[in-house]
Image 1 (spheres, rainbow, N blue to C red):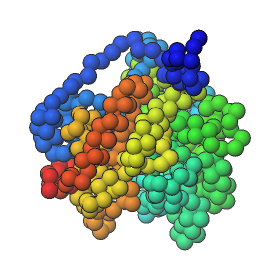
Image 2 (spheres, helix red, strand yellow; image 1 turned 30 degrees about the horizontal axis):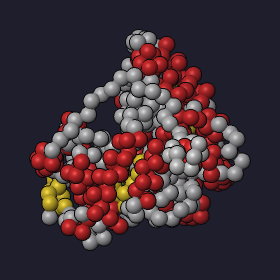
Image 3 (cartoon, rainbow, N blue to C red; image 1 turned 60 degrees about the horizontal axis):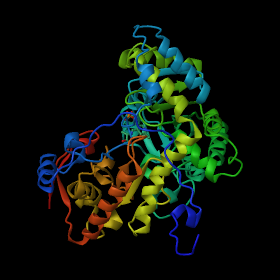
Length: 470
Ligand code: F0G
């Protein structure tokens, strides 16, 4: 071989790429559109990506919730649905999977995560009690407030800084928590609401060390600790990668250890558990379980189906076992990171470090000339759609809503636009297209003007609010 023989990248750099641990068996064609069609669709949707028809969307990064692809095994499981009203075999398979991989004793299925949030909030919160948590999530906080609770954010300050590189930005600030407990009295704390990872902070993880210290503190004061386990599998990967002593443990081992320090969990199975619909609630305490079982029949369905079909529970049971495989979690989070690295290389402001399920564009830094009340993140989501048909989501002032007492807008520190990656759906080539579209919108940032809200619903306004160009 002479020096002039061209070499492949692999020969030159000894490069070893990663790839998805699956192959594609069925495809769903995507819809392409023209700029004129997108302008019309965006105006009709009131500049709210939630109000677009999915037929008008090209690459859909609205959410990773219920948008994942099921495996052939899960589809086969769907055919094995036992649609008995009571005692379906699929319920027992689900219960077994949850006890095996999450380790909780008593399980209730629910129609999705917010069904479980409703039940636990109603059962555990007494009116006027405080619910400290590591940053809020929209539906979680609302259910806590509807039950009479007062949510208090006790996440570490670093979580509110989009460029701080703290490896566990989901951690609870134990000083903030202890101050709250001492000033309000332990009896006035309903429970600690811990999410792993923290969606609104950018998919940021909680460390095992922080959890252990939190458990010690809640034990000291006799306070319960419940986990939002929605993306706890992804959180487990960050522990494996970043925390001393966990490099040789499997995701499944880390997940079970983590859950073992908590008193129970609620779950949106539409994320980590790889199903299109479903959720669950799990607790270890029998008396609390009895109360929850009373409530589930009122709001969801009998305690062995909780609003789900037997086939849904079967798909979930199989999805849970698939979701904790190390190669699955690595490729899932790896794809998110790949997109993050492209954007970072181009100097585009995103929340760092990149989290588990999404890239969060920092709309404040993107559009420094827009005031927060001109909805920079909502504007960015609209511009991205207009550029390429990619659908993203606002996570800023519109999502934060209003203070129930004063009626004022909450002005969250983070004003973000979320590019959420569905599990096992898009390829690396799609990520390239997304990155290039974000770059085009970034290059046009100086000539972009903001939005004003012209219709505002009472609850979770971001879902249905309408906007117009300023
Ligand atoms: N908790 C977290 C952390 C979530 O991200 C979600 C949903 C829920 C609870 C509620 O679960 O939707 O099944 O009722 N998050 C979705 C999202 C909607 O797009 O981030 P659900």
